Image 1 (cartoon, rainbow, N blue to C red):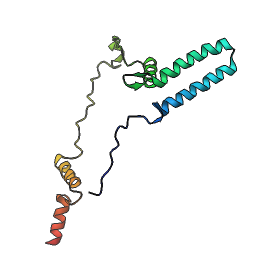
Image 2 (image 1 turned 30 degrees about the vertical axis):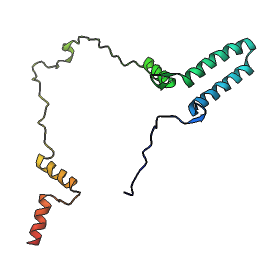
Image 3 (image 1 turned 180 degrees about the vertical axis):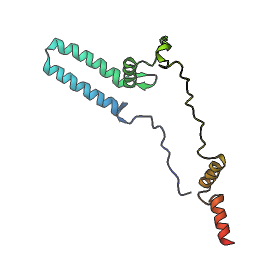
Image 4 (image 1 turned 90 degrees about the horizontal axis):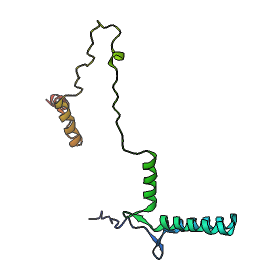
Length: 153
C-alpha cells in the first residue's frame, strides 16, 4: 500500500509557544500590555491604576478563562449575538377581516388555479439514467443499445 496517509491527531489542541502559553493567549497578553502602556502615557497615575486593573481583568478573562471547555471569546461573541437577535419568536395572533379580501364582484365564481402536476421524467427513464451514471457510461441505455444492435445485424 503506497497511498498511506498520516491522520493528524489532537487537532483541537493549540500550539504552545512558551511554557503553557499558547499563541492566542500570547497575542491577547501583548494587546493588553499595549493598552496598559497607552493608559500610562495618556492618563494620570490614579486613572492609570484603575484602567490597568480593568485591562488586566479583561486580559486574564479572555486569555485564560474557558466556558464549557471553549475559550471565553467564543462565549462573548455568542452572548452578543443572542442579545442582538434572540431566537425566541412570539406569535401574536391577529384576526384578519376577510371582507377586504373578497372579490369585487360577489357573483363571480372562484376559479381553482391549481394545475395538474406534469411529470417531467418517468420512473423508468430515471432508473435508466441512474444505471447509466452508476456504470460510468458502460450501460448506454435501451434506446442507444437498440440502435447499436440494429446497426450490427
